[in-house]
Length: 305
Image (cartoon, rainbow, N blue to C red):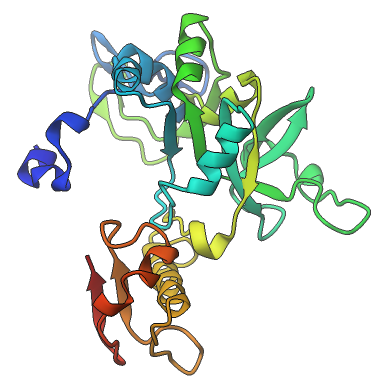
């Protein structure tokens, strides 16, 4: 309904494929299955790893292959700076004949809440931050760098052939547990809304498919250009900091094209800038459209489309 009401945001209706991921049962802290009703097991989504099965089961992969789509641009974090169509990333992935590849950045601190890239049995693997013991998180190399310094930012290129191969082979991903507040019924059949975590949800993670790929590459990227996550209501990694990073990045784009951007005393842009993908996918596009960009004054709100 939302897509229809907004004219599919300018995209052809036939190019949008909506599919639903699977679910997993919930259980309490003692291992007993929870019920959402007297005859219904309480369930929750099976995690972003479930997308690999849902893509195939729904027919989305078949539809992609019919259209000649070879690569899936995948991300899962609320990250407005995501570079959806990165020619360098796609090109390196294709040149290396990889099946599933990832973007990474240097962690800001040992305990930053991002996945940790490593090699396990010669295969590229991601260890979730909650699964990495602190002593390993703080471990350093002889040069003083962190042993686990590359953080996963949940950006991947995945081959459609790879997703098809996994499903035809009957693959499975490891289950991860998350202790959560789960609405359920009590022994009397009354619905309860717990104030504290009362159960466990099971999830699969898409990065656990990396070791199943015959080949995989990691492209280290720049945080300020590609990672402005929204995870918190305020403070670090909030909508406020994400917006600031988006404006700062687009200001740099404009300046690289020779456009003057007004700045405050601290060096941050003294204006609001948004650039639609229809106007520029990357900063090099702006150089060809410099004559279409108006002069920007202090306090201006600029939207280029």
